[in-house]
Image (cartoon, rainbow, N blue to C red; front, side, top):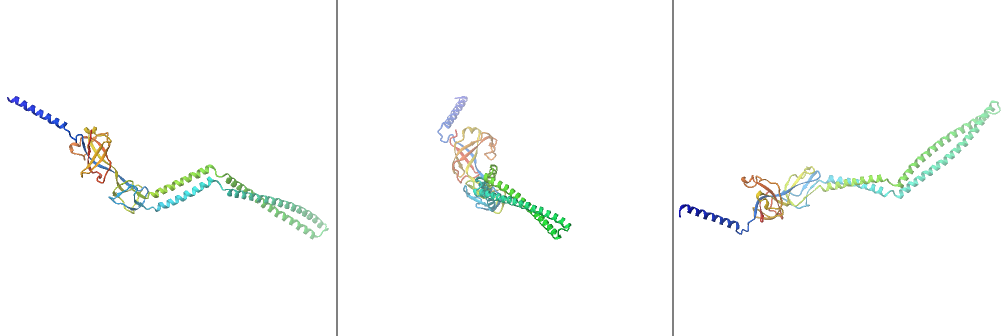
Length: 371
């Protein structure tokens, strides 16, 4: 066999060996065939816990690293100012609600009857004053007649005295009688004036009592009742707000978790919304991972995966979200050569997270049947 034919034979044998080996590799029964393994980091949400109202921090019942349950009271603010505000708001609401109830129910029959009695009393007094006025006027007329007679007597006696037909004493008596009648008339006129003033006063009082009686009988206007109702609702809302503010002086854990940080101490004056504690939630726990662009079609939402820690703990998870937008590999992932590769971000939801998963922990994500 010459040298060229020998080279051809060796080359042919090598090609057949390579083809056979490749066929065996791709056609062999590999139970792990189709699995896809990704690297990722645990992503746990955090909550900044704060009071909704301002005030002085009274105490905190937890410290960093403590586990808390949802609904657990973990701190208190000085509640004294809010207790006083609630008492004031409740009192104001009760007063306005009582006024509204009175207006809606209308006036009591006893009040209406009392107003009617007061009106009748004033009318009776008016009638009495009017009758007395008539008597006073009759008395005045009689006194005026007496005065007329006295003046006639005085004039006659004056003439008789001048002719020496009558003694001076008789003239003096006539003058005295005339002056007395005149004084009586003046006094009676003053009494009549006072009586007329009293009558005008009675008439004014009667008008006031008539207005009061009509108001009580008809009740309150619809506009006044609507205004009272609005004021009562406003006062009740203020009382509810004061009650809510008082309840907000307790710091309640919003979810199960671990206290990561405690930023203030008792005695601190806090503004509303100022962070007091930072809570790491126990649920949900996610894993943030990235998949290469060529493998993008091999995963889909709802796909079951295994999350494995470096300590060997395994958790079941589900692909919950796949970013539709490609991005460059984060610099914290893999080697420098892979940093320029396009990848897609995945969010893996851990079904039953345990205490072994902590914020930022690196984990492996195994997708057993990546199609």
